Length: 421
Image 1 (cartoon, rainbow, N blue to C red):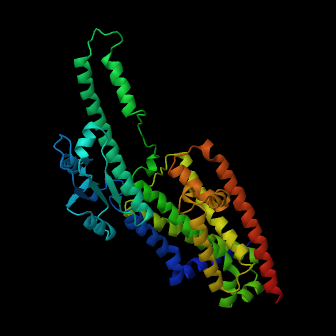
Image 2 (image 1 turned 90 degrees about the vertical axis):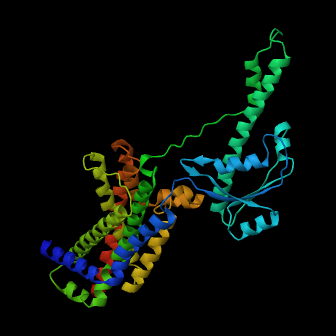
Image 3 (image 1 turned 180 degrees about the vertical axis):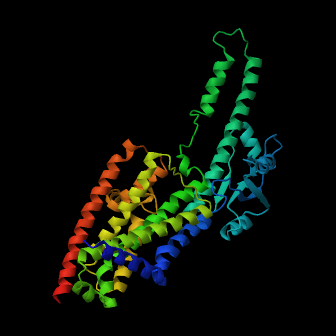
């Protein structure tokens, strides 16, 4: 093998790629665009902080009880979580006007407090009419979840107040000498009626996705995986037809250089292009606040470059398979970009596979390229150890060897076909 020829093909391919504006867009600009969209649209500044809901209230309650509609609105105005007001309350005199503003998107939710609300809460059960803006599923879930949590906590505290008042009357009118009387047991029983199940919810989140910077780091890796996939497919699919369109294929076939040298040189050139693009994407991710948990002092973290190398070679190998149906470089580019973006969105590379329908999750779990991206995330996001990652690494390497070997056979068959023409 002539290493000088391999180097020549490598250098020429890298130079020509970085001179091609269309290629630069897909290799560098597009991942950067996705990272910026993620940073300022999908995960905007303030993600994870308390959301203040704009809530309209119609208070029809005129009860003279200590707890009434007016006092309930006061609680809403004074509820603060992590130093931020939970509600921005706007009073309305008409339910119709409240509905109108909800439909126009001026409010997130509305409450209609009926007459007698305070009296009913004091001596029985009060009723509230809740209106939730539901112009999209996400808005509906967020608004409903915040209000439900608030009302559940208010109900719990009111129950405890009523239980304590009841106990004072019980203790006053029931002699302490009466057999079997125990204020503690009675209180325990009443609390059990009001709150039969007392739950504590604690979120268990990997440190690497517990904050906005860490989430941006997760999606930065997704953008790199996306770019690796469609660019690798494009490099492999256009490897031969591009030389043909440039008029250099016949001269290359007639020269002392072999087809293997062309394959190796272009593959190495593709890897260089992908690595440079990945570094640029990482820099942009860090600039917008992404946090990447990778340490050169951790031996297992050095598996990340190995996974990236397998991802690059695997994508180029799949691209070589696409060369069977690619007749022009433009066709190869269009097909590779379309398939790359499709696989990115359906194979758990950009979106977490848990968000996908069941049949897509099956595809995501068995798509070899996804194994390589999962390997990187398992190390950087979930901080897996060697023993946790060994099987996935072995699967990725075997899949890479098999896919690139099949791609090489197809490549050689294509070279022979062009040589015989």
